[in-house]
Image (cartoon, rainbow, N blue to C red; front, side):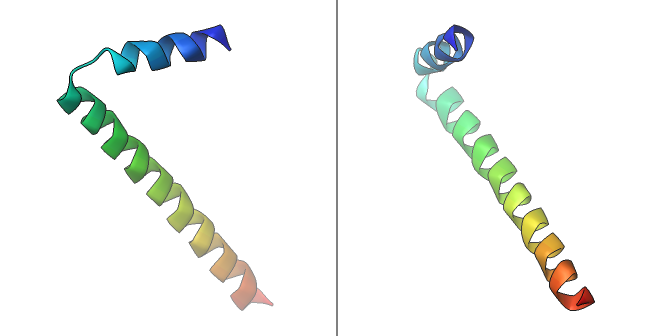
Amino acid sequence: MEKIFHHIRRIRRQPQHVRRHVLHVLVVVCGVILILLWIYSLGVTLMK
């Protein structure tokens, strides 16, 4: 848990453009995960 807090503190000390880049990467990764879950649920629904 302490490692996670250390990384968060390290990101907070970064310049604005670096934090924005990290935020965009996290949003894209979450979006891809949501799309994959949606495709999987559509496939399961259509198979029934």
